[in-house]
Image 1: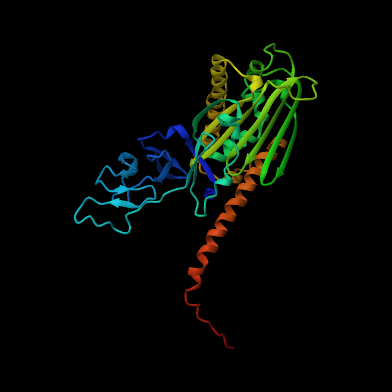
Image 2 (image 1 turned 180 degrees about the vertical axis):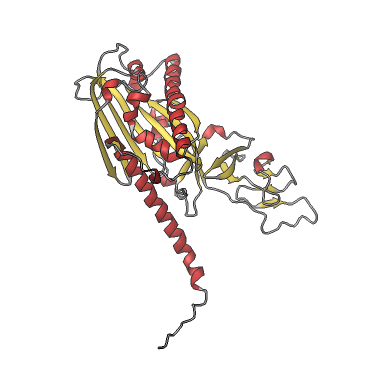
Amino acid sequence: MSFIHNAWYVACWSDDVKPGALFSRTLLNQRVVFYRKADGQAAALQDRCPHRFIPLSMGKLSGDVIECAYHGLQFDCSGRCTKNPHGDGKIPAAAQVRSYPVEDRHGMLWIWMGEEAADPALIPDYSVLDAAAGYQVTRGCIHIAANYELMGENLLDLSHITYLHDGYLGSPEQVGADQTVKEEGGRLHCNRWMPNISVPGIFDMLYRRDGKPVDMWTHMTWMPPSCFLLDTGVQQAGLAEREQQGWYYGVHILTPETERTTHYHFAAALPAGTRLAPEDAATFAQMRRYAFEEQDKPIIDAQQAAIGEADFWSLKPVLLTVDAGPIRMRRSLEKLRQAEVAKRTAAAAPADATRAPAPQVTQTA
C-alpha cells in the first residue's frame, strides 16, 4: 500500500518540539527531525546525514542549524550544508538533505511530505482547539500497531461502541441506531441518532449525572486522508433542540508511521456549558484515553496481526450495513492514491519522450 503524500499530516503536538531540542519521528516511512529556530518557527529535515547516514537527531543544535554528531557537518533549515569542518572546507554539491514545509496550527505541528507545493489553506479546520474559541480542551496521543485505514474504519463505524465501549461511550440500546452516510465536497459524514437510550458513563458525567435515559447522537466527519471530527453528545429524551451541555467535539487525527503502525492524536473540546472542574476534566480525559488505549487499541492491533501482509480485499471481508462509511473511505483513498501516481507518472513523461523511438519493422509476405 502506498501513502498519499500530497496532504497535510499532524507530526506531533506543537509543544512536543521544544526550543533548543531536537525531536525525531517516523512519518510515512521517513525519519524526520524537527526543531525550532531562534525565532520560534519550526523546521523539519530528513533525519539522515548524507555523509554516513547517521540520524541528524543524534546531533545538536548550533544556532539555527543542526550539527551532525559523527563528523560535524552542519545543515540549515532548508537542508543545505553550511559547514564542512574538514580539509579545505569545500562543501560537496550533494551535501544536502530534504526539508519539509511545516505549519503550527491549532496546537499541532503539521507537515507536508509530497512533491506538490504545500498550501496551508488545505490544513483542516480544528479551530475548536484554539484558546480563542473558548472550549475546554483535553488531548493525548497513542501509538497504534496497525495500518491507519483500520483505525479510520473504527472511527467511521461507531456501531462498535455498544460492545467495545459499553458503559463508557456506548450502551446496549444503541444497536440498530439510524445511520446515514453522505459524501459532500470530498468529505464523508457518518451520522447516527439513538433516541431514548441509557446514558453512557462519560456523557452522564458531562450532562445531568442522574443516570436517566437520553437521546444521543454521533456525527463523524472524515477529511481525507486521515483527519476526523466528531460532534457527539446527549440531551433530554424527546427534546427538539440541543442543550448547552452534555456534548463535545472529538478530534481524531491519524498519521501513518509505517504501513503497519500509526500515530493517533486525539482531543476533546467541551463547550462553555459543559465546563468541568479540574478534577472532573482529568477524569473525563482518563476515561476517553482508557477507551482508546485499553479498548480500541488492542482490537485494532489484533486485527492488523490477523491480516498480516495480506491485502485487505483479498481476504474477502463480510460486509454489513454498518460498513457503508468505511467502504467509501477505502474507495476514496484508493482513488486519491491512483490520482497521485498518475500525476507523478505524467510529470516523468517528458524525460521518457526524449528517448529514441523504437525501430519500425515492416513485415512482408
